[in-house]
Image (cartoon, rainbow, N blue to C red; front, side, top):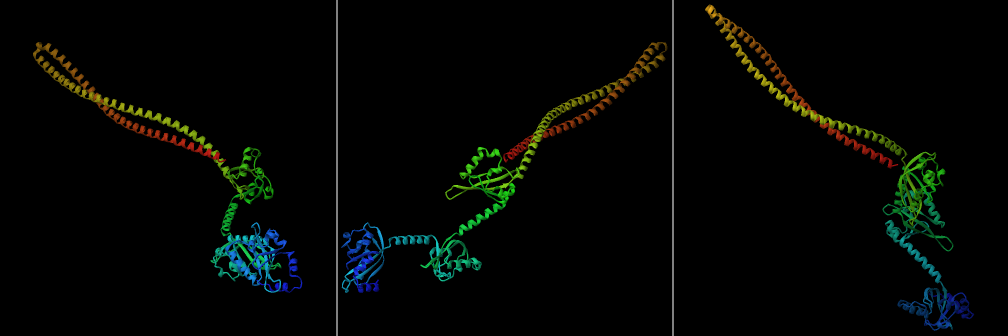
Length: 573
C-alpha cells in the first residue's frame, strides 16, 4: 500500500533523511534493505526484537525473519516486486526471531532513493505488537470457543438483528436470512413486549448497560425456549455503544426440570414438615408444617441445635454422635423418631434426613422431611395394649377349649361304651324273649296234658257213678264195691278239681307269659331305639370332639396372630 504523503514528506524534507529515520528509531525498530530484500542496516530496537547481533543480520535475506513455507516464498517474491516498483507495503506481519519464536510486527516498508530517482533501498518502520496479537488471538480464541458452545446473536441499538451464529439458529429453528433486519421482539411474547421491563432492557443497552439473566423466548414454531443470556453493549473508543452482542445458553430442559423439581418440593413442603440443618446440626430454616408440629416459631429455632428436640439421654449417647457423623458422610437416614415439642410434649415423627451434596460429592447441609404420626403411634400403642389383653383372654379361651375337648373326648369314649352295652343288652333281651317263647310253648303243652287229665277225671267220675249204681243193684254183695267206687269217684272229683286249678294257673301263666313276651318285644324295640339314639349321640359327640379340636387349633392360631400383631406394634415404636 502506498502512502504518498509520507513518501513525499521524506523526499522533500530539507534535513538529512537518515536523520529523520534516526529520530524515529528511538521509538520504533528501523531496518534497511536493498531491493533484493537483503538487510543493510538495523537499529538496536530491531536487533533486540529479533534477537540478533548486527553482524549476524547484515547481508541476510528478509526471508530469514519469515516462516519458511512454500506459500510464504511466493508471497515474499510478490512483496519485494511491489517494493521495487516503488509501492510501499504496510500491515501486520508474522515474523520469527533467532530462536524461531513467533514475533508479530506492525510495519511499513517504504521504498526510498538517495538521489530522488528510482528506489534503491527500502526502509522498514517496525512496531512490536506481539503481546497485542497474542492478546487478540487469545480474545479471538475465546470468542470462537464461545461461538462453538453458545448461541450468539448481534443487534444494532434499535434491536434489529445483524448476525446470528449456527447455535442460535439451531436453537430457535431459523435460517439466518429469516432473521436479518428483523426486530428482537420476534422472539418474545406480546405480553413480554408490552412489559415495562422489556422497554427498560433496550433503554439500558442504548446507555451501554450490561444486562443478564434468564429469559423466556419463542422459537420459530412459537414454542417456549428458556435461555441464560447476557446482552453486551460493544463500545467505540469514546465509550459510546455501537451494537449489542448477546451470548445465550439454552436452559429449557434445565428450566423444565427445575420447575418440576420446584413443584415437587413445593408439594412436599405443603404436605410435610420440612427443616434444614448445616452439617453441625444447627437449624437453618423450617417450614410452617414443622413449626406447627413442634409448637415453635422460626425465630425460636433458627440457629439452635437439633438436640433441642431430643431428650438428654439420647443427645449424650454414642448413637446420636454416630447419627450426625453418618449424615456428614452423606448417608441417608429414615425411621420413626421420638422427639419433644416446645412444652415437653412427646411427639413421633416419620422422617427422612437427606444430606445435600455439592459438586464434589461432599455434604453441605441436611434437609429433613417429616410427618407427624403422634396420633397414629398412640393408636398403635392402644391397639398393642388391647391386643395384649385379648391375647391373655385367648390363652384362657384356648385352655377352656382344651378342657372342653378333653371332656368331649371322654364323653365320646363313654358314649361308645354305652353303645356297646346297648348292643349287648339287645342280644341278651333277644335271648330272654326266646326263653319266654319256649315257656309259652311248654305251658301250652302242659295245658293240653291238664285238659287230658280233666277229661280222664270226668270219665273216672262217670265210671265211679255207674259202678255205684251197679253196686246198689247188687245189694249186700255190691256194698264193698260201692265203697271203692265212691272213693274212686271222690278221687276223680279231686283230680278234676286239681286239673281245673292247674288249668286256671296255666291259663294265668300263659297270660303272664304272653304279657311278658309283649313287654319283652316292647323292651327290645326300646333297646333298638336306645341303641340308635346312643349311636347318633356317639356320632354327634365325635363331631363335637372334631369341632372342638379344630376350634383349639383356630384359637391357638388367633392367639399367635395377636402375639405377632403385638410384637409388630411394639417394633414400630
